Image 1 (tube, rainbow over the protein chains, first blue to last red):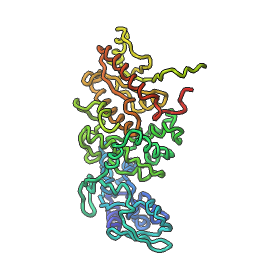
Image 2: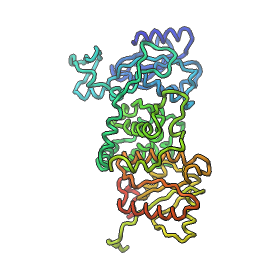
Image 3: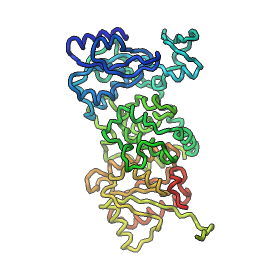
Image 4: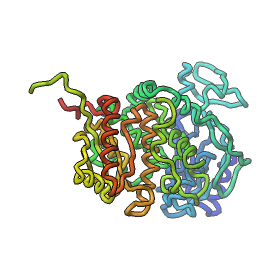
Length: 323
Length: 148
């Protein structure tokens, strides 16, 4: 796959279709891969990489990049195309300035899960079907891919590219996943249990803002959390209220626009399951206002920008579920 | 200061009322000499749609035990459709608060028209009673804001 992408990128650079390429760049170790912009085929030859650790969703970079001079080539995984579509719908990117090459993804690996198994000194990984061979400076290890798969890929919602100019490989299908299972489990707990669960999780928050910064839906020029008058500007939460508030508002601001790409939880250094908050909103929207997948198209109205006169009353929340 | 330990818990209720219907409704209940609890503190907003989720959270932070949002009846909004948006937003917000384990009866949306003074008073009486039963807000309070 990497070779096909490199040759495609070089070809498009050479024939002048694009002037830049956004993809992923090798880091110091085999697993610390970062998004990067390449401007020449030499750079691509030297640094371009696409492997089991290229999980970063590069769509958000296109907000700024698509406004620059010249077309940019973006390699997007299926989940990334949803984010791009949503950004196109919100007029946050200049879609005409982006050349999208859809690439298949069969799930990315979570380095933290590998490290948690006590494996260190990793020099490379090799995937063969469902088994994963990890070479380390202390010798080789093998394990099942499913054991160390990134959480966002375990509950993958779609292998279909919703927007692209060209595809490498075959396009997949929207798949039915069990992504709402955990939300449902929490809903069936008592209010006390839920409160304790979320206190346990949210109290770990160090307010690094990584969840906000990585989120392709969080593209406001001025974020409410950067407002000096808010009292919560760029500082660690001083009280349980601030932890709750940050996470409620963060999730609320992307409600109806979140494509469930799972980046928030992936980047969280404290492993807070932030995607559950987003999924709760998605689940509510689906059940109350009809099935809606943000980013699936560029025309339909977002649920919170829309209404019907027949909508349920807010009291529905008080009537359903466990007390 | 003397502390009376037998004192019954008195909740603080914040009521966001829209300028065109509910605030006038509250006014009507006053001119009609209807009783509603002094626990209720009214904040007038141009439209129920003006209420940002942050307002609700801030109210809890600063010591409210219950927050009620009142607006025009659906279809009667002074700005045509503001309260329809409110309805969706608040449904999702309340559902999220419930999901985080915050008692769901602390929040409510009620539609009160300018002619419904009696409904306003009844709603406030009932809501205050409901919040009184729940006791002080502890799950969404800011300890730094607690009155000594």
